[in-house]
Image (cartoon, rainbow, N blue to C red; front, side):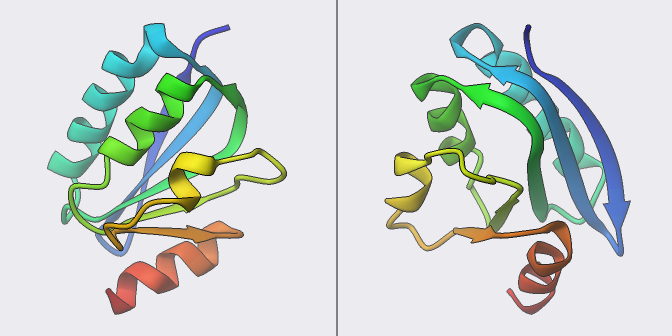
Length: 108
């Protein structure tokens, strides 16, 4: 199963909801989706991973590369995320749910 996505907007913040599995073969499509969402919102982005069943190391790396500007990630659940957790740029904020992710970006 490959990745699918859906877009919603909350007060100008784009929310990209991911579903399925984000593997190496899907990173190009994912990066295109990120660019598409940013072009239709104020540029800030929340990645809601609560519908994601899993990802490869390349998929997680694509999420890290998406942090060109402040990025909130929510819905990790129990999924290990060593690359996200080790981000030293300060641009990625891991939140437990969509509401707290949106609140973080409102302050950023």
